[in-house]
Length: 238
Image (tube, rainbow, N blue to C red; front, side, top):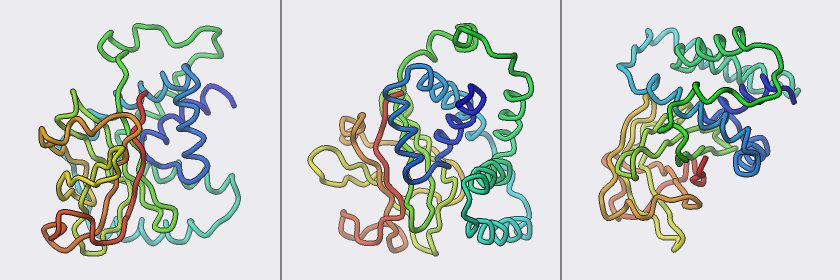
């Protein structure tokens, strides 16, 4: 795989566009391959400010047209077609700034170089390891990315694709003891920041699991997940 392919793969991983074996392979590389981990970290830092600005929602008719095309394209089966669909989604799913950034990287990237990108690309504070999670579900094709901010007091939740079906999407953290702790109801369409109760911050660490269940309006009435799980994924340190 060439260097530009790795850079796009890292961006797709951070955005949560990879599914199944592709997502598992990328997660393994982010843990074992330092060069790929640096690319994942760089995209995590680069995309976070783009996804936290004031969103501009296009007319409803535009989204209906996009949804119709997605449903048709998802039926195509070749690897080349799947890769093209992922890149098309990156240009259309509520992140035009992200697509512009990807294009700029690929167009302006110099020829192959023996060294990793110069340190000047990232300030010293960006070199610190960060916690991210890519949540998905093969049946519903859900894709949600979560970046842990600070020492775990906030989460940046980006629903790339999350079909709630009119129900409330509730976020849970599941640490090693297997007991889900609610982090509250999240938006199913736009990026948002979620405050983490102090009592739950110690549970947000590498290896723990985020999950999203579909609940009645207002969230679970029992304090535990009662509806189907729309997406889940482990927290990774990159």
